[in-house]
Amino acid sequence: MFKNSSQSNLQDSTSPKAIVIGLDCVTGLQTARILARHNVPAIGIAQDPEHFCCRTNVCERILTADHETDELIRALETLGPELKHKAVLFPCTDLSVLLISRHRQRLEGWYHVDLPNPEIVEMLVDKISFYSYAQRERIPIPPTFFLYNMVDAEQVAEKLNFPCILKPPLRTPTWTQRAAAKVYKANNAEEFLALCDRCAGWSKGLVVQEWIEGTDADLYTCYCYFNADSEPVVTFVARKLRQWPPQIGSSSLGEECRNDRVLEESVRLFKKVGYRGLGFVEMKRDKRTGEYFIIEPNIGRPGLRSAIAEAGGVELLYAKYCNTVGWPLPPNLEQKYGTVKWIYWMRDLQSAFSYWRRGELTLREWWRSCRGRKVSAVFSWSDPAPFLGDL
Image 1 (cartoon, rainbow, N blue to C red):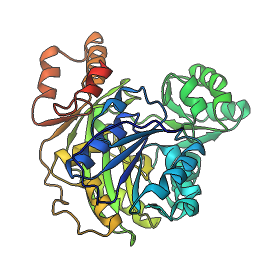
Image 2: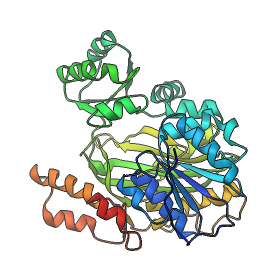
Image 3: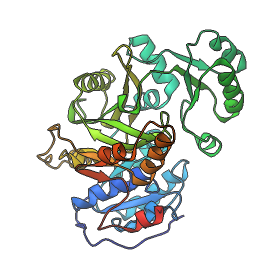
Image 4: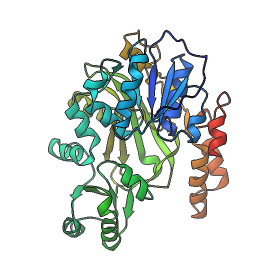
C-alpha cells in the first residue's frame, strides 16, 4: 500500500505533521508547498504516485493509497501509530472529506478531524441535499431541479429556461472516468434530454440549474476558515478571470478582489449551519440583474485557488494548522484587498487560445490580464519538478 518518497529536511520534526490527502492534484501540491514554507512537516497521500504533483520535494514522505475508498482509512490507521504527535489532516478532495467524516471515530486517536458534525458534512457535500436545504431556507441559488430518471428529465425540460447546466450530486470515480467535464451545458431541450440520457448511469441522480448569464469574471469565491465556535477566523475573496474549459471549467486565472456581498453571504451560510474548518463558497453575479447566486459550497478542504490567499498576505491554511494544534494564530489574517493574481499557466494558455479563436481575446489583452504580482498553481523555482512533469 505504501510507497515512500524521501525528502525534505526543511521541516521541524518536533512539530505535529500535516497529512496532505490527494497530493496527486494541484490543490494538494499547493497545500504541501504552503505548509512547507512554515516549516510544517508534511506527509502526502496519493492515489497516483506517478502524477506530476508527486514529483514535489516538499513532502518528507509520499504514501500511495486510494483516497476515494476505505483504503484511505486503512492507510491512516497504519500510519497513525508511527506519529509522535496528533497530526492535522488536509484532505484535498470531496470524497476524502466524506471518508474522514464517516470514519472519524477510527481516526481521532491519531489525527485532528477539523470538520463540523457528520450530518452537516453530508448535507453540504451532496448537492441535492444542499440545494434542497437552500430552497427551504430561501438561500439564493439558481432555479434548480433534481432528476432520477428520464421521466423527470422530460417534465423538467418543459419548465426550464434554457440554457442550463447538468451536474452530479457528487463527482464520484464513475463520473470522473466517463464524463468529459465536471458539468455540462445544454442550450436547448434537445441537447438537455440527450445529455440526461447519456449521463443517466453515471450518478444516482442529477442536478439541473438554469444558467446564470455572465462571464468567467462574474464568478466569485470566498475562502474561509471557521473555528469550533463557528466564528470566521480567516476570509479571503477572489474572482475568476478565465477558466478551462471556458464557462464550465476550473479556474485558470483569478485575482484578489473586494466583494462584500459575496463575503456576507458566505459567512451567513456557514454560520447558519454551525460550520467549522476550511471551506469556500462559489457565487455568480447575473450580469442582467446584478443578483448574486450561490453556485455551491465546498467544505473541509482547500480550493484550487486557495493559494491566492497566502499570496495576498493572508495565512489561510497555516491558520487552520495553528488553530487545530492549539498554537497561537499567525498575525496575517485580514485581507487587505490588493491586486495579487493566481495562474495555472498550462490551463490558461488553453483557455486564452479558445477565446482567441472565437475572436473574444487578443494577445495583448491576454498579456495584460496576466501582468502583475501573482502566484503560479504549479511552477516554483524551489520545486521545479512538478512543472516540468506537467509540461
